[in-house]
Amino acid sequence: MCNNYINLEMNNIAEEHLCCAISDKKHQHGVDVKRAWLAERILEGHVFRKLDDKGKVFIEYAPLETAWVPVNGENYIYIYCFWVSGSFKSKGHGKKLLEYCIEDAKSHGKSGICVISSKKKTPFLTDKKYMLNHGFEVVDTIADYELLALSFDGAEPTFADSARKQEIDTKELTIYYSKQCPYIPNCIEQVEKFCQANNIPLNLIEVNSLEKAKSVPCVFNNYAVFNKGRFKTVHLLNEGHLKKKILV
Image 1 (cartoon, rainbow, N blue to C red):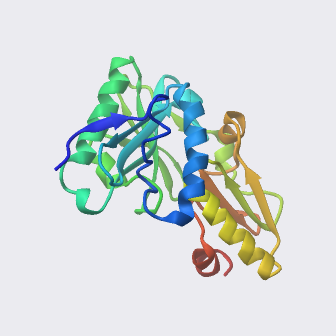
Image 2: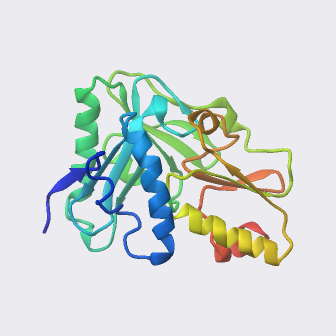
């Protein structure tokens, strides 16, 4: 079993695979888009640490001040994505990756680490139960979504006030999205084709700056869906999920 981990840096990001999308050809454009986005973020202190093997085993985090999420707080680290899948589960990789993040935060004098989760296990969000077992606590809540934090000094982050709105003026299907996930471009393409074929009005809003990400009107990690003016989900939509879960 491989127990070597590496961080993506400017000198290796062009060659190393991104663990969350390594086999499906339809997502290769998304990988290129993510790689370009990540290259800019690395200069801001963004960390992408992964197992040195072809598996979905990684943790991705950044200083909260430069993290593209509607979460506010001082001197915190924000975890974007934390994933151990398939045959790599139950082998201690998650614990090692999280411990690395914690030690990294402490070595830089951070006040703590936070992550968006949910009351029930939700795709594309970090598992709440796992984080609670490692000392994280719920520090803020918006409907079914929760902000978890591991505080080192008592300070706690909060969701931005804008995220509590969960409403927008337009009634048409609206998707806020960024380029930080390699699955997003294909999902957007599927939704666009379906909506065009079925004459469904669609409003796509690219979150392409830190300022936009900090002020989105809902919970947002890299994707958020509204329909009929109400926030629905952070779940990345393909055609099937759109028909079954949103347009009902």
